[in-house]
Length: 52
Image 1: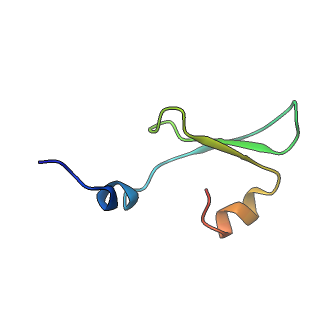
Image 2: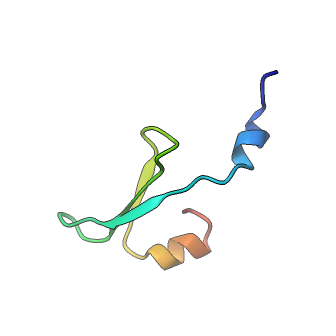
Image 3: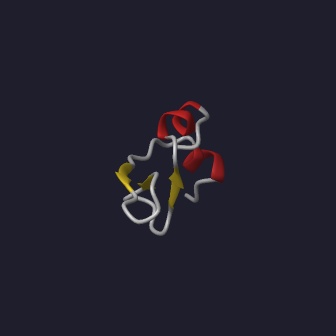
């Protein structure tokens, strides 16, 4: 049975945050989602906004 988009959006995905030593700020990587990640300068604000 094929699952729809809502199913995958409802899953919890782990992520790793590490400092970006070259540009400053932080990089978030999602190990379960290949090629998916993001950058931010204020991780707490981004998490509060639901981005990571």
